[in-house]
Image 1: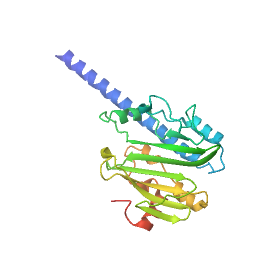
Image 2: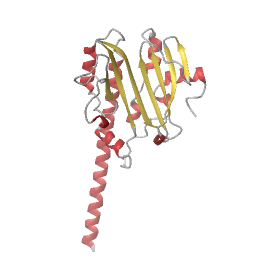
Image 3: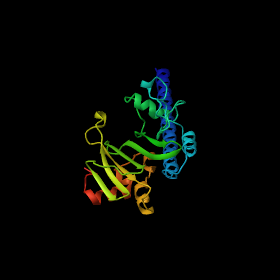
Image 4: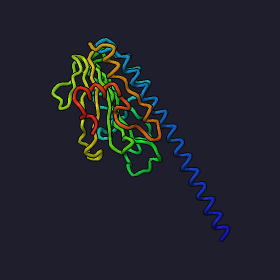
Length: 247
């Protein structure tokens, strides 16, 4: 009996240590992915629309890695993806914001225990028109600390979005809009805020639109509302359209 108890105790301790070690490794991996995501955004913000060449986009995609081709394409890229060998002249690079193989596994098997790691994923894109950068964007979905899904992102292109249901035109070169999702697994309360800029935007507008703080994604409790990640854009939207960004 004593031997059986000792064996049980040893097994329990071993399992506990394994779970603790696994959780620690997952947290360290998540911190690395958050830093990488911030690095992608920093690199995108150095691009100049209509001026930066395709070589700069190539180097960014090579540094951070192109997203793998979708399974429904049979493991190959379509011609609209710049990573395809036979890509067309106007193509786009797509990079995963959270490229962790662990997060990919969680996305495929949502019933797996996350061991305290928050859910967040998204992508960044660089669109080319011939030999120059035409636009770039980043978008992230995350499960907030209260369990609801939120999103945030930004883009730079020649023209601002039009005819959006919740669009705050801060100036002729800067806007903030609310994006609602129809993904049923995220629930009816999921939404995000996206900023848009044109090359005509000034320094202050670029700061407001591009001030994205990923650090809360690395914390154990995760991120709260979007105002925690994009405080200036949230304030601009809130002051223009009211409280549509928080319910």
